[in-house]
Length: 416
Image (cartoon, one colour):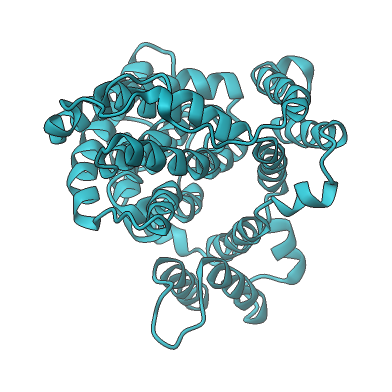
């Protein structure tokens, strides 16, 4: 057990701290190295390591990445971002549009992709309208995390939880959409409270002056967007048509690749293969630690019962640990601890806590990092402490609201 515990600890240190001096390591390489060490030191055999990889989750991620890659190359996200911000007629309305559009589309498309394409348009809008961009960027990142909590396909950790728990797409949405909705309103209120003066100004230039910078492939959009819409419908009715969510995602990916007219190599090049390697490595590390009994120590000290104590424990654990290793590694770490608990309660609590907890700091979620790094490329700095100041309030209020919603759903018999 000691060997597995040491490998687990070192791997997660590598995931948490990727800029140690004279150490050539990043998150994927830390996960890959940890997985190899589990095999080399005999914690798992090679066959056991292969079986440890959850190919259902990998397949769902791959299918969604192909869909997103086609949408990206068709100009869908740029069009979406430009159309969204042009609806705003004042800084206050712009905030509402940024939060609403980001949260909505993050629920049904992977949130990392949404912020990747919204960020440049938000920066351009703020530059043109002579607005301070930081409040809108913070709002965008947090709205992406909050909105993504609503569905299995909103973010990678929800995909993992959805596959591992066996919760249907419809039930997952029924449980967590209220959490996302309430949290979105909380975010709007907190942003207004912190940046009231910024939102009370008027635009110095008409929003209609925003350049239409996106290059849209109209034919590709007509071919691909209906397939994405059909895919989401099939996710909801997957139990009735007898197809699993990963199979639906892969079938849709294959179909959109065939009809989009983009070169397949170009589409496949848009897939984040590094993230898939990262997931595979973490699967092996966690299975090695689980087999060695490392998580038995956790079970002795953490409440993992499907009641308010367990819901609170999972949420507090999620919020704290996600600040160190972000929400995907946190989720993989927590799954073995709750996997044998009956019902959906702790799975839903983990999805809520891991996603909402990512809003506390810049490093709490990948979406936050994408927004901040995208802004930095445009010479706009999002200060760590300013993000933390807002994130702390948003995280505490939304996590408490999430706990209240989950407890209420359990009391009403909605949540099993």
